[in-house]
Image (tube, rainbow, N blue to C red):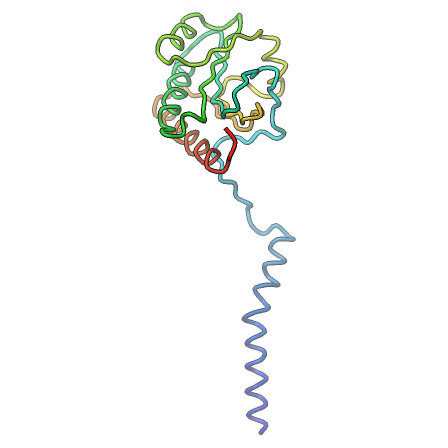
Length: 187
């Protein structure tokens, strides 16, 4: 009978190891941060979000692709303007929930403003440079932003002068925007 007792003990120990040890290891992995907590967004998540109600005073509850037109519209600016237009088109059937929004200040490049009005038919807001600086005080404005339906700027994507890199960044923005649209019931 002692061999049977030894066999039962070893089976019990094996069962404990198989079922209890993973739970104990998972507990310590969470408590001691043994792994990277991955995020799935591809842009820079703004912490805290930028409350842009004063700047984005449109009454429609939509998601916005926001770009602030700079003083000098270089290649990075042209790529950003083109990207915003292409991302909007790529949203497809969800395009009624998204709005491309370009912000023009008194210092903005007039050629870029004309290009936006002509080629993209986008919503162009005229705001003062001081208002823009006040809203984006801790964040560089040379970027493409995604704002939610409550006018909170949540994601930031830096602009680039390299056409291929700008195309890849556009795909990242589109992926994040589609994920947001899928998770959101508003807008």
